Image (cartoon, rainbow, N blue to C red; front, side):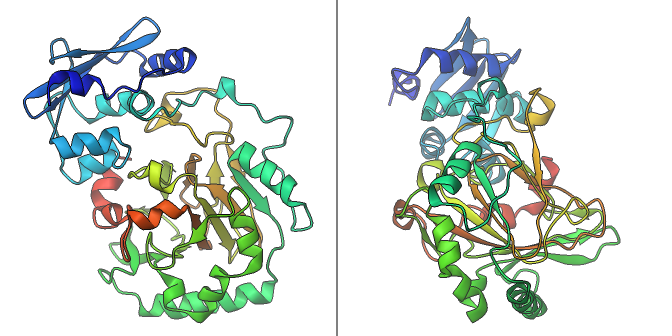
Length: 379
């Protein structure tokens, strides 16, 4: 493979308007280069375009990758954060922040995924803060979900149903232990380990398994594509998020991200995650925040420090409500400002091609779960 083949990683026939947006997204960042074996390529902004040239001359940062790692990056199988955390990416010069600044533009060049720009958001007259009930038609629910990238449906489950699920969460939580590969843990401000997520719950609980197949959930999970289906034995199955109060170290409070942030965009997107609100949520308990209309696009790592005018919606829920989000919508699960304690069960509907690439017990989040301290340091 010669240097020309590295340059050919840029997709042909990219839209000039989107190319200009990608070039603007780089801002004032200097040129960046990639060294792959004996070959090298440099990307630099030229006017309203991004050009690739052989070698590393003039690049402020040089990223070093093996050929398989480069191919994974170009194919959107593994993101730069995935490669960085797994130590499959290093720097000959420069560093992480410079690569992060270039990431949205690189994903456009390699994968054709446009860079998010709030000025281009078109909600078609819809209200980003609207909520619905199951009495709404599929067409109405689908229109809201595909426009915003998320959906809030009230009163899907009775309070008594959520009480049963909550008791089952208590049972599974009592069995959880750090390092059991069925849970995530964080450290609180006095050094205690605190449970923050249960994994593969429907494989260990009849109560949770019924929710995987509940027709109310199936209806919402397949609004965008009737082929989507639940994977109870991979991609963490149907996990339960438990929001720990106070200051914690680890990944209880997940910053702005897309669920394909570790990789697999072409495999898992556009999946739909259904959040069953066991306890309800608010800012006090750490509710879901979303950037409406950001799905199908890329945003900068730590975009909130770089991009102005981005709308943000915080979704308050009651027990029995359901949220749905397309997995590459930009969203966050911030630290509770009060007592914490939110519990949400996620049932995710995934495209058929996932089963060709991800086996039982495997998930892109395995990398995050096993390196929580390193991930937290990137925040």
